[in-house]
Length: 82
Image (cartoon, rainbow, N blue to C red; front, side):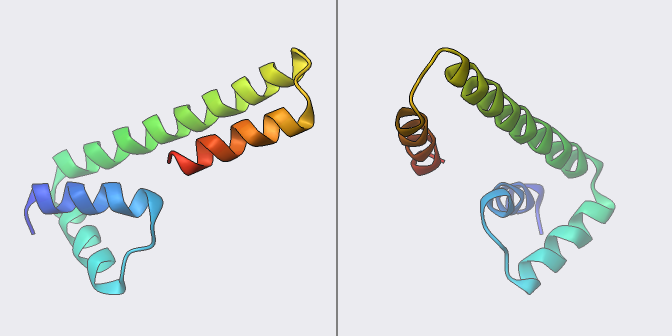
């Protein structure tokens, strides 16, 4: 597998479960490739930071007095765009 193939699958596995075959291929490639390990690390970091920002914004919205219904609509809209 190439790094291009692996990076695509790494991105895909952030949002969906991969088949057993694809997971094995990714793990095998990651065992040998530091650049793809770094890519996975960076992508995981960015994903975690986005979740943290989402949490902070949700908390901030609550402090500003948005109704629970408005907050739920915002959460749903964000979920639909992921």
